[in-house]
Length: 88
Image (cartoon, rainbow, N blue to C red):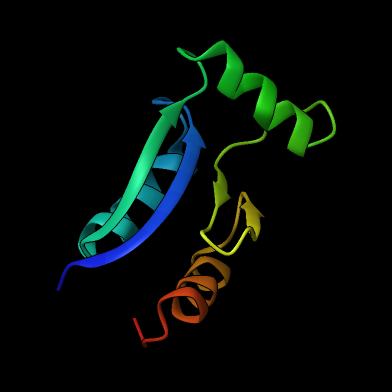
């Protein structure tokens, strides 16, 4: 099942939580844009702005404007269900 929900995931390649979130998205075939803040200075500044100066990852921005930072699996799945309108 392919879903057209566009999600922005700001993270780093070395971050375990970032890999965990990407695995959840990939397993559900949800479209998202991966932005590596170690390679994108402007993206790093955006993450710092959202997180009061901290480079907290993953920082996830959903199409409705909601933001999750370092969410648990349960918190992330609940937000995905709300955004997509279906049970995941």
